[in-house]
Image 1 (cartoon, helix red, strand yellow):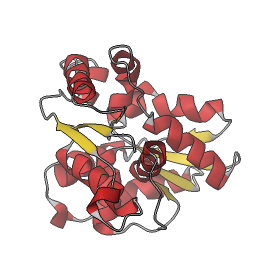
Image 2 (cartoon, helix red, strand yellow):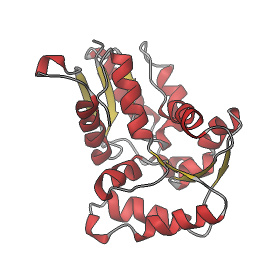
Image 3 (cartoon, one colour):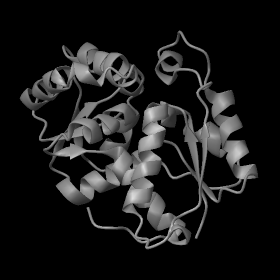
Length: 233
């Protein structure tokens, strides 16, 4: 099977959760039937949202550094558990000679296949992802309508940074559901967990409903691309 290279550290919990999901979703009866995974947990990668909104250090040099380390270490392809970092994906791909599975492209294809073109997707994500409109670009390419939070965007950012990234899980998920409710009122019938901290939050709090989890989508795509067989959910 192919070796997976994970550009990690954005944040550490999301990186751990992605590797865990790859292990859990790979059909294997013994160690040797699992996929070889290389991880560079590069916590030196500057904050992607701050870079996009114009007042932060450029993360591209560190992203490229991680990609090259993984390529040189034997990875056959790359994956990256950070939605916002996909704003810089072209710069990464231009500097390596191995493929990178685009989590956003895979997620949008999954949405279309599962919910159809007529669904309205409520996007929950960082300010950087919202401002860059990277998900809207991919969704519009398939004719899928999207809505984003306005009044509650500050709440979802607080949930991402002050609850999940900070490890204050006991604070609960009230902030998250406030954002869901605003998006529901704006017409959303499916809800994109457009930040890997939100993907991790689904595993932590067991969110149930029409939630689209890009980390799970990336897990499935990676296992299949590597030549593995998926377990059933």
